[in-house]
Amino acid sequence: MIDIKLKNLPLIISIASGKGGVGKSIITSNLANTLANDGHRVLVWDGNYNFPNQHIMFGVEPPYRAKDTYIGRVDLNSVLYKMNDNLYLLADYSVNEIELEIDIDKILNVFKQLITNYEFDFILIDTAAGLSELLLNFINISHLVCIVLDDNPSSLIDSYALIKIFLRFINPEQIKLIINNIIDNEDFDEINTKINLVSRNFLGQSFETIGYLPYDREIHKSIIHQELFTNSTNEQLSELFPRY
Image (cartoon, rainbow, N blue to C red; front, side):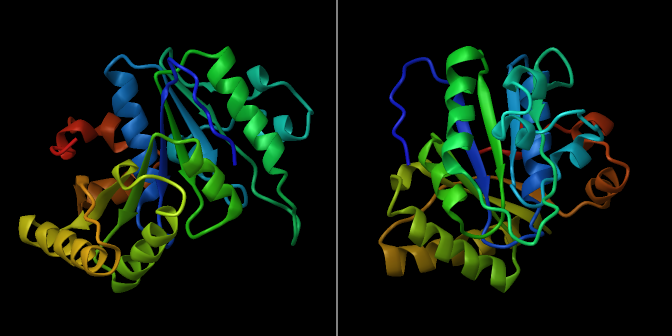
C-alpha cells in the first residue's frame, strides 16, 4: 500500500464489484466516454490483471498492453492508447499461464508515472470482481470507490462483504454504490434499501447510491457490437447519475 498526498491529482475512481457479470466494465467505459465527451481528459486503466476486457468494450486492439510496461518491455508512453483527444486506454492482455504472480510494486510504479508525468482529469480503474491484494492497492490510491451491484441476491451479499473489508482501508465517505439493471424506480428503491439496511444494521454505516442503469436491450447489443451505448444513443451516463 502507498499513501499519495500530492496536490493537483486527477480524480481517481476505482469501479469494483463483489461478483462478476454485474456490468462493472460497461459502466466504466461509458462513464469514461461521457466524461471525455464533456471535455475532460480521461484515462481508463484496465485493472483486471487476469481477464481484462476494456479493449473489447471500446472495440480496439492496442499494440501494447499494461503487462508490457509492467515487465519493462516498453515504456508507459507507448502503452497508453489514444482513442481521441480526451480519452485514453491502458489496456492489458489476459494471462496465458495457470499461475502468474503479480508484482504489485511494478503496478504502483506505473501509477506514480501516471500522476506525475501526465495531465489527466480522471483515471477510472476497472478492477477485477471479488477480493485481491491488487484490488486493495487500487482502492488505496483512489479518491472514490464505486461498487456496482444488481438485484441478484448473491450480488447484494458479495457487495456487503466487499464493503465490510473496504472499511478497514478507506473512509466510508469514499464508498459509493451504482445499481445496474433496474426495472423501474420501485426496483431501484428496493435494492438500495436492502443493501443499506444490512450495512446500517451490521456496520453502522449507510452508503450513497450515486447512480443507476436501467435494464435495456440496447445496452446489451452495444456490448455484442463493441460499441459504447453513449455513442450509439443520445443518452449520456451523466443523465443516469442524478445523485452525483
